[in-house]
Image (cartoon, rainbow, N blue to C red; front, side, top):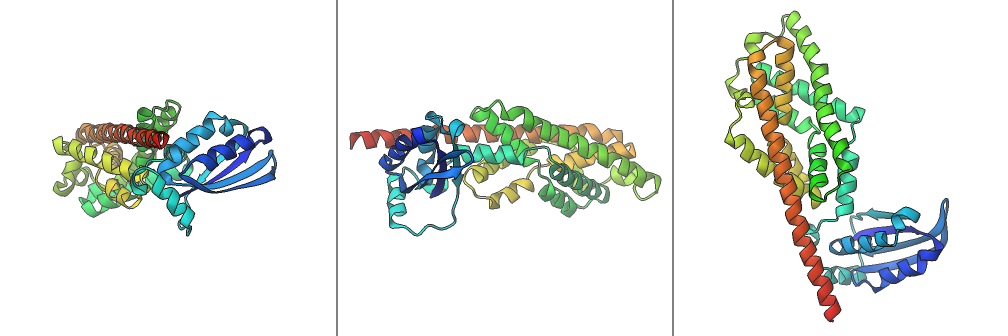
Length: 315
């Protein structure tokens, strides 16, 4: 179940309450007249089955409530309610499979902002990946993959293309490629200093059989990126955060950027092209698979919810 908290202007209160009380997937509806002081309005709260949230929110949007009031969706961990259980039974499909698009869009938009925290994590991941390539240590490459936050803007790009939501795309692209650029510009001079101090050599940077996969992309690089893209989108849309860790350690985006920064700092020009290709292959696979997975989910849930509404009309 999801929890709805609405700020409703007086002229819309009756219509909003009627919509909620007549929907079988909504329960525990309460109205607190005049509860809001700034801006003024009534508070309407309710619980809605996760599978029924999309049409409920769409109906509220159709009333213009997101413009003249507010719509808040939250996910309580536990609800002990027979009425909530009945609303869940009325909703089509299974809760774990449902996609609440407003939650997904809000999450990817918020997580794909180019902030200092994002840049710091990405730069640290880039440096760790560079050390992993320099020392030929796969465990450091894995660590860099886990630290890197780049999947958030990738997911935002997929949502922007699949929904479609063109307004999300510029910010996601700016965060992704701007973050990579900043991480590279910060890391490369540090590697140049390390080279000048004698702690990093061109020979070490260009010799590493255990991490050579970073500069030698092949068909499997693309296949893994496709599979990771699907897994990442499913984890995002179904609120299953655990599999996202597997996505992070499956793709070679941050290791490629770390290798590029290392090579630029040390002057190992021969490996930069291979790392750039690896980066492009992984990003292309993630975006392609993620977008297609979202389109499939969108088509399936539109059909499921459409069938449920048709069945309700027949009853």
